[in-house]
Length: 129
Image (cartoon, rainbow, N blue to C red):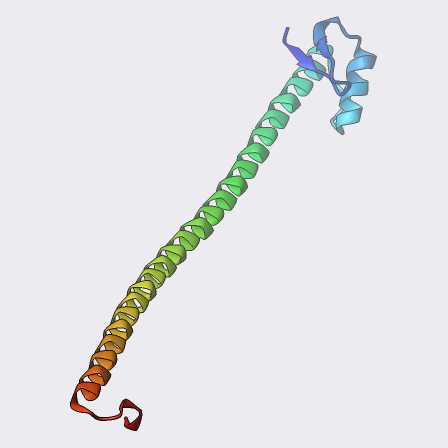
């Protein structure tokens, strides 16, 4: 006969148990108490199978919930990476623009210095400009 786990979480051989012990187990499970010893054993075994299926279904539900959470977190991660990449592109463009502005400013300063030097050579006071 099949060895099962009892409500006390210990393995038991149902054939070795008395009808009173089997009925106690059935009563605990809320199952019908009448019938022969073989019927009582069958009822307990059937309930164990039902519980095993129920536990498997609960585990499957929990796994699906965890998968949905992981998918959601992956979505957040993907969005964050996408936004970071957009920000990186914008920052790179701003740095390039700043570099160009600094180069243009340096060129303008050099042109202004050259202009003032030319004014001095022409005998014009650069402060007039």
